[in-house]
Image 1: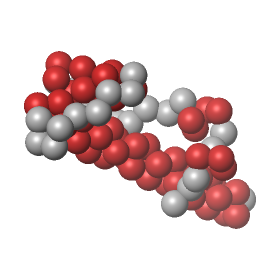
Image 2 (image 1 turned 45 degrees about the horizontal axis):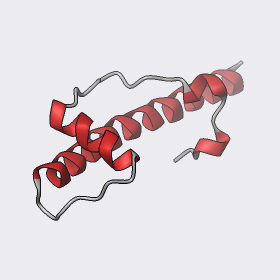
Image 3 (image 1 turned 60 degrees about the horizontal axis):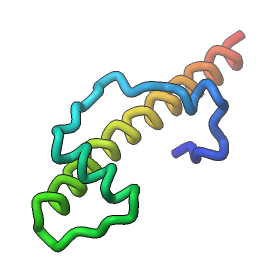
Length: 81
């Protein structure tokens, strides 16, 4: 799959087709973690952070697949001309 260093600025700005909303606890957990907080295993914040991570990872996978498909179709169009 395509790596981030290989993506164009337009591709890096791409959005997934499916936006999965994050709950308040997921958002708070991410913000606290970004500030350097750590959480006890299975605490509400730990569970929230893992859940948010799963959702964000799924959206990222979708974007990367979408970019790969777009590149393949451009390559097919270019070779078909």
